[in-house]
Length: 128
Image 1 (tube, rainbow, N blue to C red):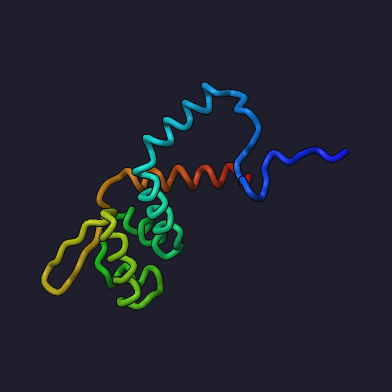
Image 2 (image 1 turned 90 degrees about the horizontal axis):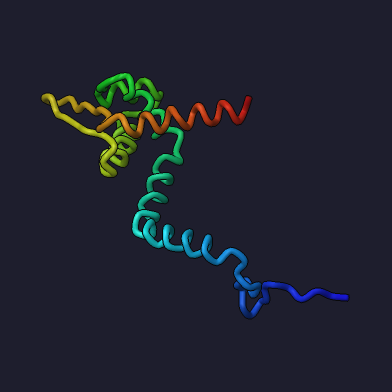
């Protein structure tokens, strides 16, 4: 005896009656509220999905650094470092200041650093 599939190729949605209608309605309403921010959150995670940029953020957690010093910390060229710093700055995570020919970067707040440290703890717990 073959059981009919709840999802057909012609209609790739669930054909089973909604079991917890109130719960589903609450979740849909919450997702609708978040709909505007979700693409921005995805871009944020894409930005952080790069080891070099994560290292830059962690290095700047120790204080303001010039581009040359960040490059030395990472073992990269100044040009490659500048590119990564610009991506982070353009998203608003870093502040920049010029002092003559020197350019210095710092974190623009503690929120991102707190989130990264929290994520580290989560990974450590998961891997323990």
